[in-house]
Amino acid sequence: MALTVLIHPDRSGAHGLLRLSFDTPRAVVARARSCDVQWPDPTVSLRHASIRHEPGGTVVVDEGSTNGVLVDGEKLPPHTPCVVRHEHMVRVGRVWLELRFAAGPPDPPGRSEAVALDVLAGRLHAQGEQAEPRIAVADGPDAGRELVLAEPDREYVVGRSPTADLALSDAELSRRHVGVSRRAAEVVARDLGAARPALLGDKALGADAAVWRPADRLHVGSSTLVLHHELPEALAEILRAPDERMRQEEYLEPPPGAERRRRGASPPGPAPPESAAAPQETDASPAPGAGPDDGEPAPPSDRFRVVDALVVLLALGVLGLSVAGLLWLLRG
Image (cartoon, rainbow, N blue to C red):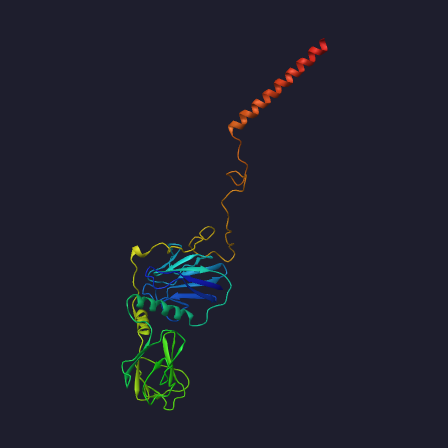
């Protein structure tokens, strides 16, 4: 199933229009990490909805969620498939999804979690909190210095070189001592061939990237570095939280600018059997010159009937005068 899910911006303004693409028989929308569309909001259940490709068409199913699933504004019965088509709008918790069925390359693994983390980071920023991980020097000549890992997948260098991202004055450091990267929700570190190997916790850091957890301290030269990372804990709190019930006034219309094509789309309800043919999209406008009923010609108006009668009477009068003139000539 070639499926693209457009995630429309919510009212918080924490994110813009987001896109996730799949090529699988089923895509699960939920709050849990293992799902295909992970959404970090307590109004989304840990297993909320699924989008499946079935013989009768593509369907959306409410998997027994707390707040239900809406298709173009109508709530679905739990565990009842509903046929959806291109550009249908589906609401899951507080988020509106737009479904697009078009062939295209699927997203790489981990893309959904990265999107969820970016959205959560936007919310933390809106609340004035630090979302990106940062490294702080806890002990050593440069105690108090910090480095924010603002760019994902970029390797930041810690060392004695003035060109290092975190340049320290510790004489026991190599010019390029360790590299630190941010990968989705994790921070990893690796030794860059330092003369004095770094220690992560109580283990020597090797050339292969190792996960750096906030509980572990990184020892480089005579300095100690600590990691501050609020995002994984914020995500863990959302995953642990019970489902939050939505208020009735939160069941709003799709966001402004959402593209919907209602004409020709199936109304929410049970999926048709396999043999059922998909309804064809029709144009309700009559063809040029067609009348109001299935293209039949429109009946003539009364005005045209009167004119036709006058023309007939005039023609009969002319014919009568012609016959009378002919008879008069013959008698003469």
